[in-house]
Image 1 (cartoon, rainbow, N blue to C red):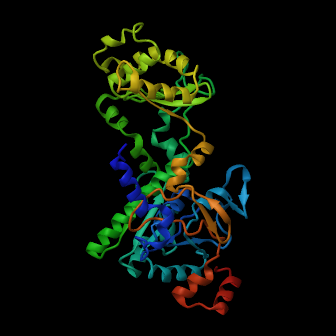
Image 2 (cartoon, rainbow, N blue to C red):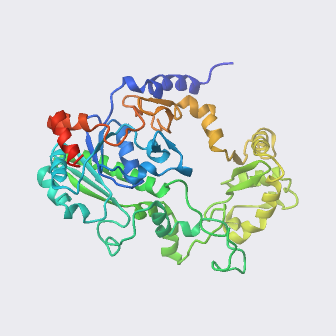
Image 3 (cartoon, rainbow, N blue to C red):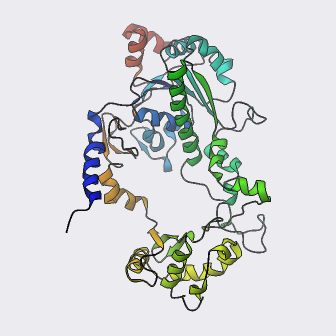
Length: 447
């Protein structure tokens, strides 16, 4: 049997972009200096992590007492005094402390700005400006500076001065997206009288913050590219809520055109069918049948071809109405609940080989636990769970290598640093401060 061409390509591409080989290759952003002033804000931490993975020298600036994110962790679990959330997003960053409430601390920051390409901050609008550290003031020191601000509601607008903080769940709640998540309110019940389980559902772990942090990282890269063309820096303004709203997809257009408000539909999808999660005897699966023939194939697998006269269906138009989908949903749940996830996957595979509509088949994928994902051979071979041997925190597994680049791959050089760990190095590198000067700064509460 001849070897398929894709196998040759797989061997070739693995040989040049395997993350295990990354440490011998150059970094795309190794000439970029980022001052990370994000404070108690995962969006900022995530943004600077992305830049640090590409090789930027990210200098994380904390107050001398440290910041809250270091203690934010599930069930109070700490690893050598650091919370798991911060441990995952402290990667590749130099950690220094600086008291910006003191004039001397602010003077030192201004001096650092003269060496920096990017300043990232997450304070409420106007906070840094009142300290003499806003964009208008700092661009006088460094006209090429990229000044990147992530806030809850943006730098302008009626809510920009709101006291409501930039929390991930605030962004989710104010976005309009969460309104349409979660199980359906039972017929005849109102949101105020519905069962406790019929409520909107939070999306993921700090997902809205991750979205705004990702958007800001992309914005920073675009601003750096423009600076290379024009020589000019600029200010970037991202609202976590606004960034997350970008993911509401078609619902804005639907409302604009028809006044439609998307209500909760559980695991079903308003736009396409069949496209949902369904329970199984040992967990759950994703069911996908985006074409009529795929939906018909799933009906055939369920043994409903004759009962539902499936062969007479001409298109998916009737199934675009939620009331039509709900007619079939109980039968789908009853069927999938009788089998394991693995059995259902195998049914789809076999139907694609020998079924009535072969090679057409529905897509069925198991919903796996974090444990199964971390032990999956595919992901381990691709390197996302490669352990990092950190000089301070030991062997740690953090998700990494999500980008595979042949020439300038990302890498995790270390996972985190204690607060102030790099004070000596950074202040010596940029200002030539020796032990005596650093001692004075420490004793004065400046660092």
